[in-house]
Image 1 (cartoon, helix red, strand yellow):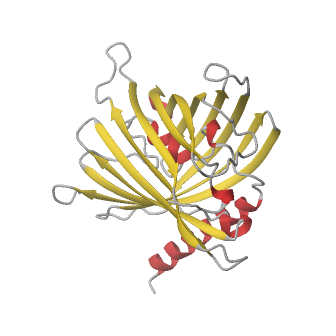
Image 2 (tube, rainbow, N blue to C red):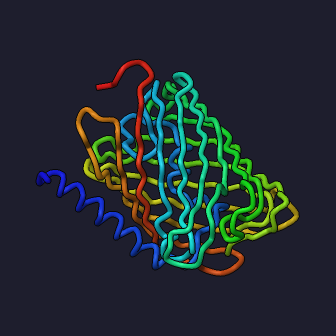
Length: 300
């Protein structure tokens, strides 16, 4: 085994171990209504800003296969969830994705079986030309749809379909500091399935909107992000509940193999949520594997 291979293996083992340790501090999963439960989902909605080297952003004319296993399930559940997805650049402006999540017994607890628990799909329009009045600003808009599959364990799903139209912007704030700001506005429309309702702590129980904003800085070897969000049911339902969230995060590229199209990134961070059920504070970690395939030849 070469020293380079040993170093890469050790780095991956360290990232995996850190993700599991951070997962132990996570008492509950943040509500998806806050847009903080899945940082990758938030980033995927942002426009593909040039030089914005974060997970989910992809060059044009590329198919991207990705997966981000839920390592925290090794601690908190009797099974492990593994989402597998495909993103595709339809043309210069449009991008579509399809993601299926499966679960299986990991052997560290009681037998929970195996199967498919969630399907997510969506389409996004990316502006390719900066605004004439603000050359450093780009925008995107799209719609995501998620639904539970079959009859998974009750703790996996809230029992609802989610349709989320959204609009997002990114703006280069300080080029010399590699500092970029971003913001998204989305509407979460719920439709009940035949599964029982199972809302998490501080998860809004009806249609809501979420406004998120934050800043990120590229430090060349890693990226830092700070995202704040506000969710409310006041304008879209008879309820009047609000959820506030704050999430700092650090994204580390674990591989930079020349001549290949595989990227492995680790994300570590914390979250703080204030909502109808009180205050939540926790930490989380994840690892995401991406493989980009160019449709015409191999990009170099």
